Length: 112
Image (tube, rainbow, N blue to C red; front, side, top):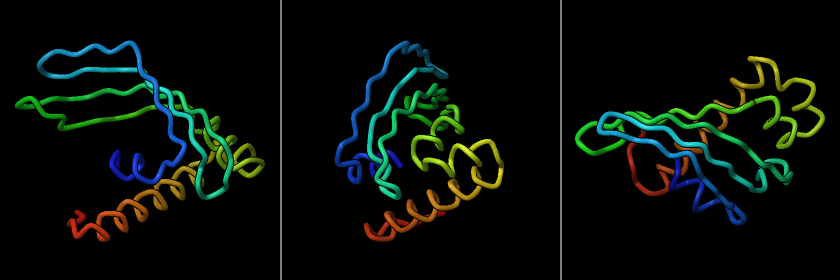
């Protein structure tokens, strides 16, 4: 997912802070500024991330953020109106998963 975001995000800017980690896990706060490709709208997303490590590698990475705020920026009036709904969250998740699967297929990588 990160490779896709970095390659496709022509104006992506990321800042991070409050990084803490030990052998088993960690957390960080990061913020991203970019243009949402589906709408052409600017987004400033504030994210808290949690990681789990095993053998020195990330085995789990979970981001949390205010979806309504993101949807309001990325989708405009529709996002403001429906950003609280599970329907919109699921639709965005599904589109993101399809985009990632397509990105991986283009590179000959298996999706699972």
